[in-house]
Length: 56
Ligand SMILES: [Zn+2]
Image (cartoon, rainbow, N blue to C red; front, side, top):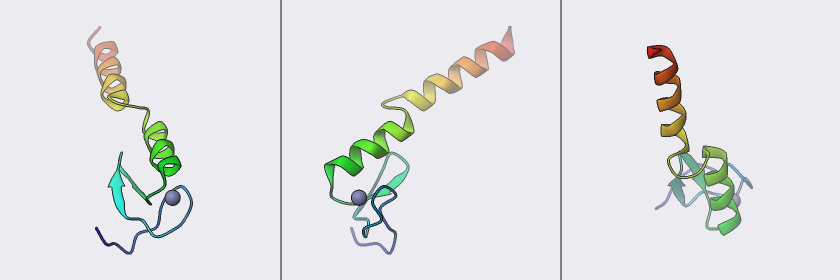
């Protein structure tokens, strides 16, 4: 994948789009992007909780 975007973690040219963020080949950057997004399913859980509190 070639892109003009920059890695959101270190600022190098990004090579892929993961966890709603552009990242480079570095594993550290991939990990950081994953943690920023809240881990697997993190966003969905948060959404579910806010929906439940509205229905109460
Ligand atoms: Zn990077």
